Picture 1: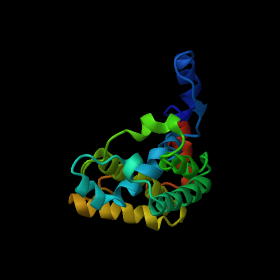
Picture 2: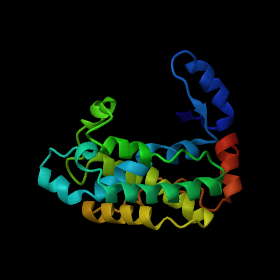
Picture 3: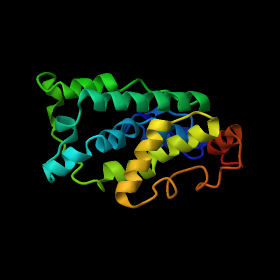
Length: 200
């Protein structure tokens, strides 16, 4: 998958040290890698759209067996389209749409090679890391970058709002946003320059 150092100018050094151990492709900067990740498009929305079943299963819910219904996959596709618009606006790597792969995961009668992944448990509660971490970290950053670029992300914003309400926590206010990183007053070009050179 994509990886990068901070600042991005040090990526070659980082890749040299990992040579023969881990193999990565180069991303533009750390914001690129943060939003360019399947969990950004999967964990939060797919969990929020399954909250009643999570409650009913009482700790025995498995998202990739129980939760990937057609409407949940449709929500994931909406997340992807919002992500794609933000990534393109910022000049970031635009990952391939992961929804067809998740449709294969949802096809429980086929693709037996995916059974181990399907068996992963959780989320077991509304405060599971799939919800808390992704609402506060990658999805908050995606929404923040969208706001800076003038790209609307209503579905992702709604997922954060619902997760926040159900957890009595304002995940966006506490989240990985340009405001909380002290970058809100900079232009998009200045932010990318800082992430790539370390110079404000």
